Every structure is written in C-alpha cells, then in structure tokens.
Length: 364
Image (cartoon, rainbow, N blue to C red; front, side):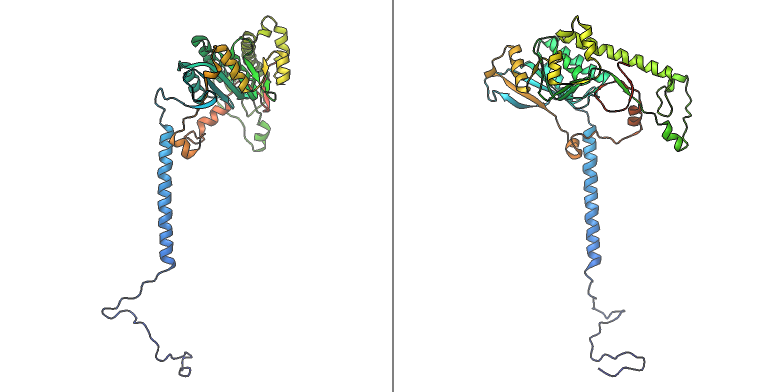
C-alpha cells in the first residue's frame, strides 16, 4: 500500500482489476444472479396462477349457466330400514329447507322424481322453513297435493326446527288424513298470516336532500314507494291484497285440518300470525303428533301398506355441477345486478314468519 496520493485516494498495488468495456476478444463478463432473476420468476409464477384461476372461473361460470339436461335424476341416499333389500319399495324423503322463494330447483326436482318413480310408495315431507312468498308456497302446495292425489302416494309431514307460515302452508299437502303431521318436541309452527314488508326511508333521504321525482301514468303506479309516507288510499289497497291471500291460507288449512272443518271460529282464534310450540299446536289441532322423522317414516309405511322389514327409506341429494363445486354449493352463476335490486324492492306478499318491519298485517 502506497501513501495517500495527491488526490486523497489510496493507490491499490497488485490488485486484480476486471477489464472494463470495451472487453478484450474472448472475454465474457460474469452474469449477475440474484434479485433481478428472482423477481422475474416470481412475476411469471403469478401470471401463470392468474391465468389458471381465470380459466377455472370461466369454466365454472359456463358450467353453472348450462341448463340441466331434461330428465336428469337426483342421487338417492340411504336413510333407514332395509339397506340391502330384495324388494324395490321405497319411501322418499322430500326436503323443504329455508325460505321458499323460487319456483324451480331442488325442491321441484324432488317432487317430480318422487312422483315419477313407481317404486316410491309414499313420501315423507321434511319441512324446516319459516315460509316464503305467497305464490311460491302455493306453487309447492299445489304440486305436492297433485302428487298425493294423482299418484295415490300418501304424504306424511315431519316438521323440523320451524315450519311456520308458508312452511305450515306447504305442510297442508298431507291432506285431511289422520295422523299425518308430526312435529318435533322443539318445533315452532303456525304463524298463519300474510305480510307485505315495507320501509319508509323518506326521513333518511331528506337528510341527504333526495326527493322522489318519478313520472307515472297514475298516482297509484308508485304506491308503496320507499321514498315517502304511504297514503291511506294505498294502505287500503295493500290491505285488500293481504286479506285475499290471508283468506286463501285459511281455506287451505280448513280443507286439510279435520278439526277446523265446520268450525271457523276455532281457526280464527289461531290465525293471528302467532307462532306455537309443538305442544300448543297439537292441542289446537294444527298438528297430529309429536315425534321425530322416524315416527313419520313409520306412519308413511303404515299408510302405504308396506312391510317395514322390506322397504328402503331414501332421501334425495343435490346434483352438484362443476360450477357449484368451484364456486360453492349456493352459487348462482351471476353477480348482484339491477334486476335483482328491482325484484327485491317490488311489493310482494309473504307467508313468512319474520321480524322485519311490516307494511300491513293480516288481521289489521
């Protein structure tokens, strides 16, 4: 090491200094390996993963939007009794789960398959629902009643945690036969009534300076608007709609519950929208027996005249599409859109046990 030079820098002696550009012939500078190449590989990996996910997502959406082929059957799952039997007689469990809103889908598939299967001799209708729209509840009541009357297959109802309002309405498809509606000891049922939910957001909109300024062909075209208080004229019209749906509900109950045939007063005392426990419902005649699904199955076997040692009890399983598997069993294959929002805001009557604020109630 020599002393510090005149420019204030050390002079390095005998150091191996790499040639500087331009390089001598035949010299290749070493390639730098490290962070730059790692980042490149990382971004390539991200790109491949994104493309793969996009492909799977599009494939799932395509599969979910592809309609099921006609006649496609649901899978059957063993539930009870003779698992390995020599006979072919079956009792089918048809499940009504959750809010009843749609007209097609899993429930309709179950009804159609149980009705078309000649080996199904009776149906156990398993209801665990707080109800739903008036039209959808009536739709399924109609098709279940048609299954019972046209095929001659008896229906026995097994109520789960809740079978209220539209859930009770659908249960009437068991018909006027004795001992056909079973409620579990902890079941909530009843809630005979109609409701049109409505919300008045006018106070909130006023705070933001929002005013309704719709152009309509008549003042009643916008009745039930969320942006203003309802008029007495509008309320009277909605009440009439509710009363008609309420009248049909009571007619269905009266036709299928022996205790209320010829005793309108007894039904009127119960048709207040009140929810009843299983014990209260049995005492009032809304249900026949307190028991679990096994008791309902035994009653169905009895009504069908079958040998309990040579009958297979089955229930139907959802047929999952590729889209359902990738997006979830409840995926609908579409995002929330304007059409859904408009549909949700439409005034619609419900046979529904709900805590939602009410517009009008059956009984006002």
